[in-house]
Image 1 (cartoon, one colour):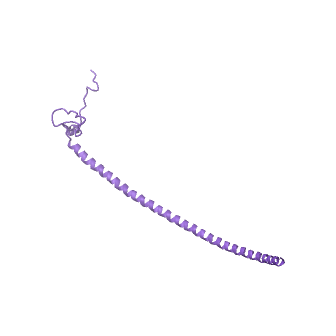
Image 2: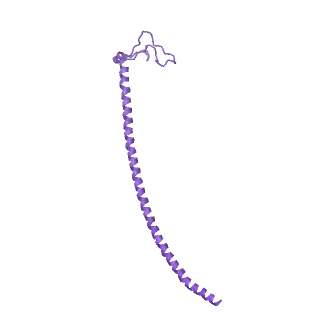
Image 3: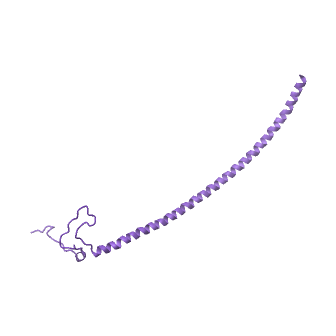
Length: 145
C-alpha cells in the first residue's frame, strides 16, 4: 500500500515538546466570543519562554526607538545650528552688499549735486550776461518813447 502525505506523521523535535504551552485543564480550548477582549482562547497558559521573549523584546525595542528619537533630536539641533549659521552668513553678506551699493549711490548723488550746482552757476551767469544787454535795450527804448 502506498502511503499518502497525511498518513505519515513527523516526530516533533524535543525542544518543541519541552517548551510547548499546556492548558490548565484537560478540556480542549474553545474560542471565546468576539466581545471578549481579555483572552483569545479559554484555558490557555503562557509559557516561561513566551514571557521571557516578551520581557526582552519589548523594552529592547522601546530603548532602540528612544535612542533613535534622542539621536535624531540631536541631529535636528545640529541641522538647526547649521541653517542658522548659513542664514546669518547670508544676512551679513547681504548687509555688506547693501552698504556697498549705498556708498556708491551716495557717491554718485554727491557727484550729481556738484554737477547741478556747476550747471546752475553757469546758467545764472548766462542769464546775467543776457540781462545786461536786454536792460540796456529796454532803457534805450524808454528814452525813445
